[in-house]
Structures are given as C-alpha cells and as structure tokens.
Image (cartoon, rainbow over all chains, first blue to last red; front, side):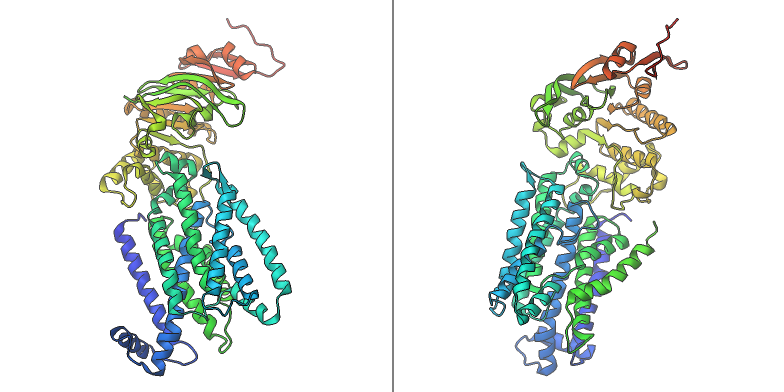
Length: 337
Length: 267
C-alpha cells in the first residue's frame, strides 16, 4: 500500500485508540482490583482538579500505576523507534537498539552505581547508566569513523567489540558482588519499572520525543538508505549526515529509555518488524506506528510482569521475550513468502 | 543539452592509480558502452562520472557545470544510475521503489504529489512493469527487478542514465530485451546513456560509441567498428579472439578462441 498522509493519520489514530485502551485496562489491573469505570472516574477527576484528594483507589491509580504505565509506554515507544532507525542504518531488519553497544555501556554504568551504593540515591542509577551509554556511543562512533564518514560495517564491529569488553567487566563486577546487590543487578539487567515516578517521565520525555521527532524528519531518507548507501546518494540524499543523525539520535533515545528502567530486550527488534509486516516498510508510517505499538506492547508486558505472579514481580524483560517471541514467529509464518 | 565531460581525471584508492589522466566526453543523446578487462577501472570511472567518487586530479563537468560543486539532489535530477543486482532485505513494492526516483524533487517532509505518481506510472509503462506494481521487489525475478530499477531511473526524469554491468545476471533473452529497451529510450527520449558492459558483442551491437579501458587508461575509443577489432580486443584483454561480422546486422562480433587454436585467415 502506498503511504500518504491520510493513511498515516488513519492508522496512527487507530493505534492511539489501542494505546489508550491498553492504558485504561492496565490501570484497572493489580493487587487492588479497580473497575474500568472507577479508573475513568479517577482519571477525569484528576485531570479536572489535580489537587483533589482522590481516596485510596485514586492514590493507587494516580500515584502508583499511572506513572509506571506512562513510563513503560514512553520506553516502549523509544525502543521501537530506535530499533527502526538502527535497522535502517545497518540495512538489516534484524538489528536492535542494543546492537551497537549502548546496552553494555549503560549496564556497566548501572552495575557500577549499584556496587558503589548509589542505587538508593535519587538519580544515581539513571545518571550512571545514561553516562555509561553516552560514553559508549562516543567510543563506538570514534572507532567506527573512517575519515570523515561513518562506515556501517566498521560501526557494527566496533559496537560488538566494545560490548564484549564491557560485558567482561560487568561479569567481573557481578562475580565480586554481594547478595542483595546481585538481585538488584539482575533486575536492572532484565528491566524493572518498579521505581517509576513522574520525575523520571519528565526527565526522559524531552529526549524521547525530541529524538523521535528528529528521526522522523529523516523518514524518507531511511527508505532510500535501506535500498543501499550508493542508491541513496544517487537519489540525492546526504547519506553521511543521515547516518550520523540516525546513529546519534537512536542511541540517545535508547540511552534515555534504558537509564530509567534497565535493559528490556525484544521490544526494539520485534515491534518494528511486526509493524513492517502489518503496514509495510515505508518509514514515514513505520516510525510513528512502531512508537504507538511499542508503547502498548511494553505497557501490556509490564502489566503482566507485575500481576501474573503477584505479589512477586517478574522482570519485564523476561515477559517481553516470553510473549514477544511466539507472536513474532506467528507473524513470520503468516507472511506470504 | 546533457553532456558529461571528464578532463584528465585520476583516482586511486591506495597508492596505485585506478584511473589515470583520463579525458572523455559523452555528448547529448549518445549511447556509450564502456568495456575493458576486470580491474581496468570501468566501475571506478562510472562512479566518478556521477560524483560517487571525486577524482583526486582533474574535473568532471555536467553540461559545463563542475560535478563536485553541484548539490546531490541537483545531480540526481540530471543523472540516474541503474545499479548492479543486489540484495534488498526490506519488502518495498515495485511502485514504492519507482516512486523513490522522485526523491530529488521532494522536500524532506513532502509526500509524493499527483504529478509524481503520473511520472512513476509512465516510467513503469515504458519498462513494462506496471502489472507487478504492487508486488514486493524481493519476489521478482532478476530481469523484472532490473526493469523496476530502470523505471526508477526514468522516474528521476534524468538527462543521463548510467548502467553498471546491467546484464551480468540476466539470461540471454533478458539481455537482449534489456538492450532493446535502453536503445529505445536512447532514441525515443534522447537520453544520454553510458553502460559498463562485460558483453562485448551486445555492446558492439547496440552502443553507438565504445570506450575500451585497460589499466585505468583509454585503450581505444570510437565507433564499434573502430574499437571492436581483433588487435585492440586481444591486446586489451590479453586473450585470443576472432572478430568477424554479425551476419544479420553487420556489427563487429567477437568469438573467443581456445589457447591451442590458431586463428584462421579470413577470406
């Protein structure tokens, strides 16, 4: 199907409805069961009068569940769009946001922070993990640069090697960690939204929305890029700039997302792929649709993570993989080859 | 109106010149075949002629304007390139691929206009690809995909089209079909065409000018009759060939010879 503005708006409207539905249902689920009607009433009242004392249900919904759900949605959108961009940059539909080493850098930052006893400081973990990610991004960029251009194969190799090096350090740190640090590390490495609050949302919101906006402005360039670098140049695209923008901004939104919740796998790989199978490969539709589907998907996954074995919480990364992989296989099988 | 003028251009990847001091001019509406043995610099030359590589010495001019100073999108409005067969992992449909040819005419956030669809449709009609417009290019055969890429090049509304070994993956029927199509475009739309070719016989049959390269320099250039001659071909390719005439069209034709065969005298 040919992509035009009408089609993009139509599909994004439907996906937005899906997202809102997901949020409402997710708000009603949890240890204290609240009906969806009650959820809507609390949301309405909260929107009309933010200072109104909302009672126990209101407190649970507005102060506990809503920030967590919004954060999960934001992270899901960020990872899905970063996945789209890395797939276009590397011309490989199986690339994911962590492929160039952002994950290992932020993990190293986070694990170091836990071991240094900073995990209880208010912004200790996000700051440490974001710094680790940014250092890695700069390092990989520097190694992957050939002359004045970015060489995608070199970039990929640089990412893999730097990842391996950081993973080795992380292994070492884990082997010397104490027991309670260890469980914090494990939860961080598999993703965890239990520390969500509104301040986290406000901090990553500009990075994620700004990054998605910048990447979206290159959407048509991404279409040409996946046809081959030379083809994109021959069709008038400034490919060197496109590659740098894609790399820097996709890494940035990944780093921002990971810094507040740890490493959540699968979203950045499966969502763009599934959306491409459903709506086609044109990035002008793929990017916004992936953002919306990614948000809904991660909210669902986190809801399952916090409810299925309550009162125990599962790491959300385990849920995304468990439910994501079979869905992915179904999509692959369904596609006419 | 659309000429390519290379003046004493040289290029090297490392320390060995791949193209050295080459000067060459293709006038508007000409149909050039670029031939030469492997490593003679054909593809490098083609890349310099549309600014994918910049010569370290010398300059390339398109209609008198220096290529290096032109904007990418302006080059793309004048010169289209049909690539060698390559793998594409993303399931774009043929029509989407052809519409990409309109890219140099669109703003960054602009969608294709009615006119762009009309241009794409005309290009697909000319290349006989309209009936699989909605099929993903990954599902097409080599010959079909090739025609889609030609349609994309036409959608750029260029004055010059460059082909990099266009027939290397095609069967003989598709090779002939390909050359029929591009000579039709050359004559009907007055497009300037340069095609790097491995097939000397097809080049000799269809191209009106031939450029024979060897070791980064022009070995011989001129009409097929001037270039495709036994002494030039056998010396440039360092192999034994027999050149006679195509019995139907009279174009020069080469026959490869085994090492142990002697060249018969022609009567």
